[in-house]
Image 1 (spheres, one colour):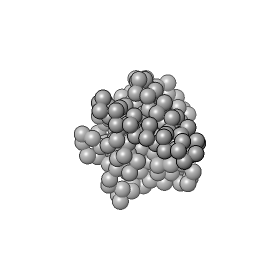
Image 2 (cartoon, one colour):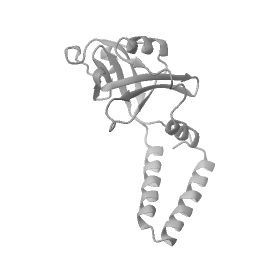
Image 3 (cartoon, one colour):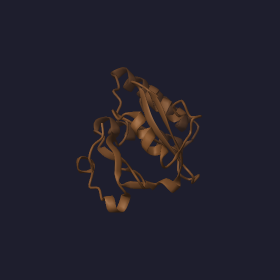
Length: 171
């Protein structure tokens, strides 16, 4: 489902090249959590805080509290929809532009309905692997457009461990 640049974002083709395909993604994954999930997370959090205080590891207690606050805030706020665009000169995610010279390779992990991800790996070791949900976009269209500019990593056929953990534990 290709969209025009006017439907997605304030886009300037003279700066970023011609738009090939675009869609919108959530800023962060929103999970449906049950009451049981919150009870278990509360028990684990309180247990870890008690352990941290008992071992005089106050920094760990602060980190656990910060994680709890962040999870609670993200539970009650709806993620913003940001544009994802593949152009002739690079990839634009929200307001961040990645040119093709900085991208080492890409891979698509597609196992509907749970896993529909585009992975971008970068040359810079300081830049982590970027996973982008494909939403309802045809992965073959995305793959064909990216093959013109990037190398495909055919060895990455499964979800990254952090994505699996995030999806399974709903964090």
